[in-house]
Length: 222
Image (tube, rainbow, N blue to C red; front, side, top):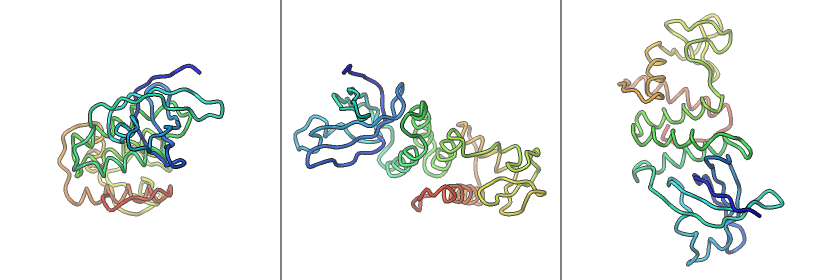
C-alpha cells in the first residue's frame, strides 16, 4: 500500500490490545481518518511521546483493506494552546469528533480555527466563540439576522426558544438583544468586543440548550 502523509490533529485515541492504540485524526487533505498505531502503548515506542492532542502533527499512514489504516510515522510540532486552556481545548476536540465524521471533507481547518480563537481570546470569550464557530460551520446554526422559523428579518429583540432564534410572532423565550447578536458575530469573526456578564450568561445558555438538543454532554465551563 502507498504511504500517505498529511498535517493532522489528534481527536481521540483508544487502547487496542495490550500494546496498540486506535487513533482518530482530522487531516488537512484527507478529512477524518482512523489508523492503528501498533505498539504505541509500549514504554519505548516511538509513537508514544508524539500521540498527543492539541499539537500540530504530521502523520504518515498506509491505508488498509478493511478501512482502517496503519500509522507509519508521526512528527509532533508546536503546542496549540497554553496549559491553562488545555481542558477547554480538549472539549473542542471532543465536539469536533462528534461534528466531523469519517469521510467528511472538512474539519481540520475549522477545528484549528476554533482552537486559535480560544488561544487568542481565552476562556471568557474564546471558548463560547470557538464552540459557536464549530456549530455554525457544521450547519447546526441559523443566521442571527433572521428568525430561524419563518425567515423574517430579525427584530430589535429576538427570543431563544427550544434552541432556536425566533421572532416575537413565532414564539417567546429568553430575550436575545440585537447587541448580543452583533457581539456574537464579532467574537466569532475575531473582532474586539466587550461582553457584559449578562450577555455572556445568555450566550452560554444558548449554547448549552443547543448542545443538549443534540445530545452532546458538556462540562461546567460553559
